[in-house]
Image (cartoon, rainbow over the protein chains, first blue to last red):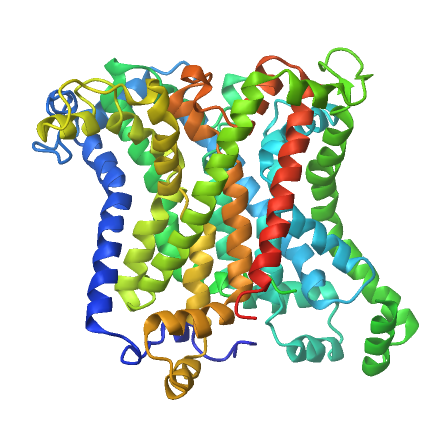
Length: 296
Length: 309
């Protein structure tokens, strides 16, 4: 199963032989089925894009139309005006988001990778137990631990600080799981030879492991960014000056019909940012997912 | 485990001192992540179980009351019955359907290559990462004639007056299920896309020689057994997701929804945890949710292990 590290990554998109066991009728049926579903999947997103460029009269037109007729930047100007009248300067929300998502993502990638290395490549007492707990944590959602989490955060005195949102995010289970699975396919021989050269485990981790798992840490970064980006922090951040962009944007969406135009742009921005990151890193993410299977 | 360790030690000729030193480095590297993991995952699960046996409102000290929260949940709480029924309906419908959708579309997309494949993957995956873009469904389902769905149906003369979709009890759950399915092609889907690419192509050629005649036989006898680890991981992702439905219900149907038609275990949990501050009771709900999720996951893993055996 071990992948040859010397070969270029493109190998993964190697063309598949299509001739065996493929009937024309089957192809047509399946592709039509997929086409219909693809339209269903993409239509709401198309609406979001079109709504962002619709002038107000088109947003309230009857019967409603999906596609914009006279695209305009009006909604974007509305949003800018709205933002410049905000009580807390909008730059502050953007700054908060950069700190929270940037810090949360960086911390997660570093800590999860650092913990994944011994789990993937070392043999020490307690290894199975620790990894077993991480796998178990994938099997329930965050709502289960929400209330005690709040108590822990209050107890250690980081409520109403950036750390309240960032620290729990450092220790998400999915990232560690994916990283550990990916690291396992690095051949032991390169680690062994570095050890023979006298390199410490820390040095091996930073100079040999990390450069070799670039697709995996890009994946962790994108997945973590997605979950941090959607976080309004409203459970922990009480001060308006600490709240992230997502919170401010949600306020605009919920501010009623008069702000419909600006809200359409906001929805567009909220969706476009994570999708853009995914597009940029898509091949790395798919490559990481090839090792995501659960053995046992 | 100990014996296995000794064996590797002999093989690698590590001295005892070196071994301890090496393990110390392992623990040091594990420490930062796992300290936080214990604080924010392990400890909360344990305290949640503990608080579920208490009467606790955050301000006063928790008071031990035994099984009372659970008894109240199952015997007195009418909304909880509705919530648990809805959650099970969600899980039983969206769980398997979304799982099959992930697999089916990944499988069809695998017939394409290069840019087309990447584009199709993006189309199916995008809804699950587009944050609260699902709010656009509010416009589609709007209860007056300006809603897209009403507009379309009236234009086709299927209805005469607009339907107030999210305020009509019988439509709430089916509509939420459709929206949930729209959102559900996430990590599991990507795993399948990736898993299908790793299958050894020579297996298909060998299969054709051995008498596999069509793509369905190929799928059942070669493809699925070869990607069992991915099937397991995908199942975990889809199951956990299908039990946790809450945000779409709150944002599309409201909380409380009409006649609690959109109530789920998680919305009920949020109701008691962040609105009524009955933390002991909320923790009992959380503990039940935890047991439901873990139990289902373990059960399904057992079933998947049997695929192709």
